[in-house]
Length: 30
Image (cartoon, rainbow, N blue to C red; front, top):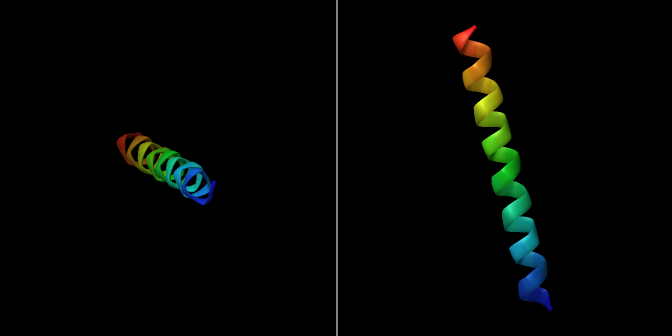
């Protein structure tokens, strides 16, 4: 049960970092 929680946190953090990276790159390419 605890492992599942960390799995969800890991995915959420990964998606968030990916979104920030994409936003950062698209901001600089304009």
